[in-house]
Length: 437
Image (cartoon, rainbow, N blue to C red):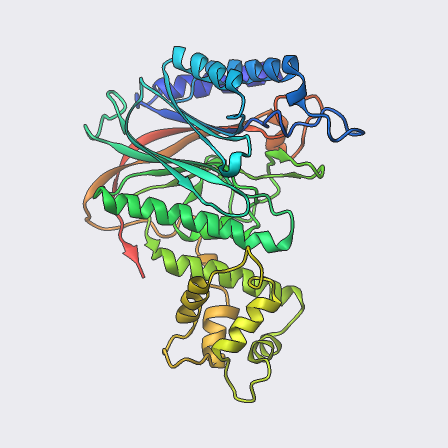
């Protein structure tokens, strides 16, 4: 195992400095949920015994985590479950990363939950233009970090002011079905925030990298939502996996003992055609809506009748639509859709704007597959003679420990309950795309 890790590591490190074959400067990005000591259980019998109670344990483990991070020397490091509530651990990371040339930014979850995020970028690769914190202020007390950075020479070889937006986040774990909509809302807030920041500072099209623990797999609604916005999973791109290859790799063994793939580094290049964000959001919620109806084994006609509720006409009313959302557990509780979100959904579904949904509108907007779900992974790239910009190609992507790349979880792995994901990017020229409605 050590030989294989060394081979992969040396490739990533050499590539992140300079591709020896094509003489192209590269950058690398690592995302890692490092399992906060306040959550790490030391005993199956005594669930209350946590690593945070034993300084030698958590200090030793975090020194080992830092050893690996500094050995790999990624240009960007995004950590989740960073123990912001412990001053000694915070100082440890800030000192060791700072001594190695990193600028680091930390953000705790709201309501003093104890853990949070840490994002670090290496000064040899980036100049930090701006940093912003996004507080969801929701039931999970989740947060996100946005870093606006500029590549420095020689990594800015195509453009003297080549910029990148980096987001680090950790979405809510879906402890029950009512929280699935919350995770969609969290991603929607992130994309809205990024979009508003781009408009606020009048940014030209540039690559966007979303890193973190998304607490959902390639089968989930969050994954489909991000894909509909043009984002690609960098690991899957490097290994030529499709959206349907959900079983090929894992990155987490959760507290229930299940292994799953939840850690992603998403890339949105400026050559990707993008739907309007509100349209993608509506499609994502209708996808969840449709999933719940089909899980109940309803046909299209039965689902339409279900939405009509007690209405005798051949249409769905807004009141019937709201009642269906409540029965599907998407509203009626503190974590459900807001009134504005419900109205936006209705507006998207009511194509002719007459205040009613007929069967054709129901089929087109709610029941049938959307264009976003049908599109191929390589569809949607800008074509023709358009303005040129700079984006990234995915050179390589590696998960550690290596067993997780085969869909297995090694019993002797103790750094975290998550795998570490590192992706190597190379700047390339490409045409700009446009938003499409």
